[in-house]
Amino acid sequence: MKKRTKKKQPRKGASTPIFGMIVCIFLLGLTILRLNISTSGSLIESEAMLSLCAAHPDGAYLEGPAGAPLLIAFKDLLFGSADSNFGFIALRCISPLAALLLSWCIWWIGRRMAPQDPGIALWAAIGVNLLPTVNLSSLVMDGGMLTASMILLAIVVAWNAVQSNGSKEFLAWMLFGTALALGTFFYYPIGILFPIAVTLRLILQGLKPFPWQAFLLSLLLLVLGWIPPLLWNLHHDWLQWGSVAAGFDSIRFAGISLSLGLATALSAGLILVLLRITSSLWWRGLLVFLALLMTGTSAWLFLVPQDLPSGLPSPIGIRGLENLVKTIETLRAQHSDQKREPPFLIASTPRLAALLGAHIHLNYPECLGSPSVFALESPSMNSSFSLWPSYADAVATAAKDILYSEEKFVSPFLERNALYITTESQHELPQNITGAFTAIKLLQEIQITQNGKSLPIRIYECVGYQSLAL
Image 1 (cartoon, one colour):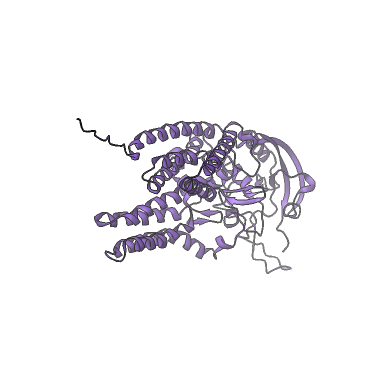
Image 2 (cartoon, one colour):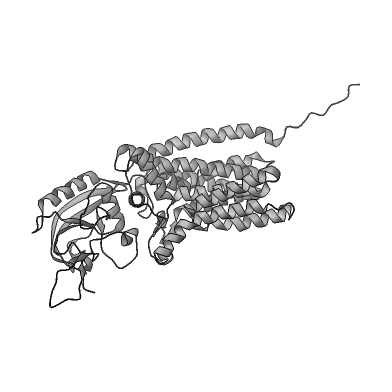
């Protein structure tokens, strides 16, 4: 009789290449769709603010870390600024490409969490890309996707460092320190991963052999990443911890303000946790329901981005700026002051000032290094405009006055005219405008569209600037 031979059961991991191919095809198609939608839109205010900060390189900003502005500054050197077609396309390509890095990190973590079940990595990579937060942050460049991808990349490198041993351990910890240093430029608390990784390494492998040199090198790299923001805050009286400035990727939904980057990273991690703990039929049914809900919401983002609530970033952006900019330039040429100087420009909000400044390029000899469009003067540290030269700064030598001899410096824009650009009607104008100019007159109203919705922009002529009373 022939002996019955047992057939070898295929390993569960044998289907991993097929799963990997499925993920690659899915991500390729989704990335093409994201690029098509994002590059067909227009600049949004947060992107304009990032671009303006990129033109003022620094170790940090009131709105957040310097990573995204520095990356945009590098992009501007290679492809041009966002007011050019090519520069705008390059800007909008950053987030969809960063989403690929995020997806790879989720795939990698999924493989390590369940090495015997490659299906978890597959569904984690697909599920993450169905998340509304991921798709929302991948369609605009407000820094949110960069923050989320850098957080998850640091987790991947930390995991690899904890599990490394032998000759590869030093390199693994050096890469971990490098990831932390770079990640600090996008998310300051990322350094908390270092003590967590060291603790896990000690628990899993004990004291012997203890890679002191690798640990110290990793810590040194993290400290080097912290130096620029620490020096900036030291020089600016730790304003970043006490300002009221909204973050670059700040969104407002249901009355709550939060960081889109952090929300994206947390929701991506939640997908992994849910897939890992799912075992019962009830849990799987819940996951299917959540997947359908996320798919429907993401499809809505892709199909009708103009219907997004006003607190969320839409790739549609703001359109009609070309006509507005031409009108401002024409009015500026037609309304010179008594000194035959063209009026300087003021916008009602920092982000509107940044948006206009992305298309209007002016140099004020009286105020070197200032933005082209000033934000309305305010004692509140609500944006980086508070730290840049402004029309209200007393930097010019005051004329000698025997009746008032203590005033040694005044604004160089005293008695000058300005154009005030705002959405406010005449009776809504703030005291910072009505009290700072001797006369105000509405010149023109221009209609632009924000996320597909009409928005009136009013241009006022403000005559004879005088400093506000203390």
